[in-house]
Length: 183
Image (cartoon, rainbow, N blue to C red; front, side, top):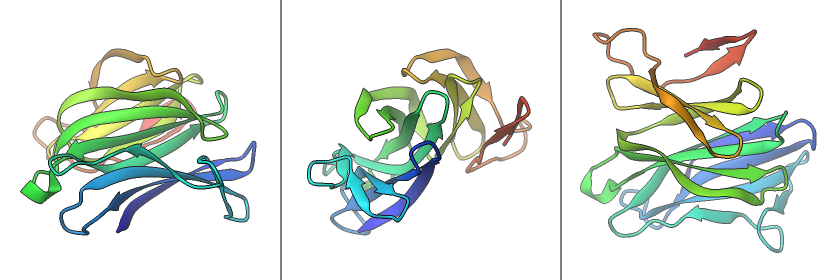
């Protein structure tokens, strides 16, 4: 089962990076995270040997890697991929937030690192402040964020991105432009 695809476009090299979950069983997993690089005609060109996708995270009977997201920084020419861990077969959809950084050819520059420990579900990310990314993640009631450099350094404290402590917020979607953030 291949689910939850997320796509980022690299306009410099005119290619797409697609990240997705792959599970042995659609209901119970275990779920892994895969990434494939595609040219402008949507031909698979890597990043694995022989123009194949690569596995970024390998699920087990007690840990699933789910809800991947990817964004591309034109300035750094790097992709940030984020996801969370969970145990879908036990009905647990919340977990820690993880990330990895790839170059424009899909090679891993920064191996998997933990962005936030806790009980979170969906992530989103956008290039931000020229050499960073803004990553959002939700806990089912609030949306939080962190700023991460294009080399994987995590800056400062967590930022609450949802509008109010009283309002329930879920599944944040980010956009940036003209120095502003829209969540």
